[in-house]
Image (cartoon, rainbow, N blue to C red; front, side, top):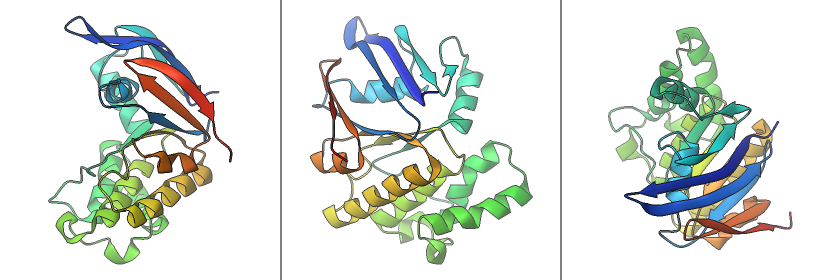
Length: 225
């Protein structure tokens, strides 16, 4: 079963086409880089895959579950159990500690207190933040905040992670460390990743690049691994 299948997806805003018949798929555990200039439709495509926006036409299927026809409650549930997003600007809750930010999606999913207490140390250790688990977001470096965000994304054991410029707000050295971490967790858990990026360096953890221009997927290139 494919982790993601995008079939002939179109989207317009005020009759202005943004996505024009986009089609591609990701296998389980596969990582692909989605590239293209600003305004090419990358963010809109990510929003449609994540269930934040709805395509006008076409279909998106995640791990066998079609998003077509799902109501808002069902889409919300899908995001809580199947798809996670890692953002450029981290989007941590400022009043919660690192550990509490990681735990938050588990609370939303209804996981029991005992199961959360069992899983949380494992997640924190996996991203190398055991010594910073009680720190507040304003006390963390950019790289540490992105580690928290990755652990939070892993918490629900998603089938797919959408990474939106995950190194865009980091210096080059820290960005390389975060890429290594994303690659490691994808390999370890068999999680597919679609990484939106302007940086060619991000492609080193991917097996394929998808190039968008004016809402059209113009090229799919296999990368040497």
